Image 1 (tube, rainbow, N blue to C red):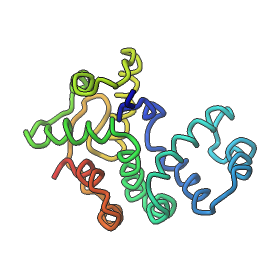
Image 2: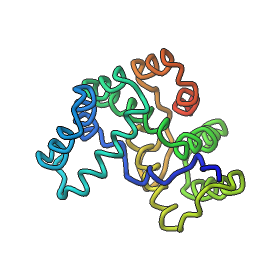
Image 3: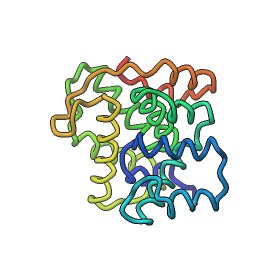
Image 4: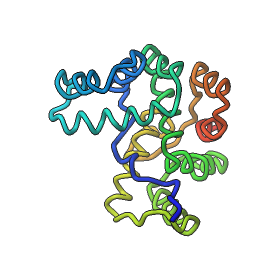
Length: 199
């Protein structure tokens, strides 16, 4: 049976800039699996309360970052808060079609129609539509769908597309020039289409 493009792995949370700077540094230093475990579990470089939480967050961040290359990892590690956040946003879009297609199909349409907000009902409508379009898409419990929506809306808030996670007011965002240059240089057409939804 064919696998769906849509997975629930974005439920791990937001972009986590500070933790991602640490993970980007480990990737740039090409640490061994043993050194990775030492850093994440023993040294607790992410400063998490339990080894399990540290492992899960490190795994999610690494999965996002390795969809891109070292030049983007450097933007995460050394860039400003805005540049680092936008670089992580680009990686999250490439890592998750669920996020990318929501931007492309729903958020972009709200901006195009000059709507002022992004109501949560649009998330649930989007998930229902995906089920109609993709027969292989997993059937998630309502609680999972809601948790996935929490993560997506939190990411949009971090990037600046929504002002807060209570009113869901929309605002345009100009993506970092360094991030845009990386995406163009590496012909990341899908990410480029999804990331500039307010233009």
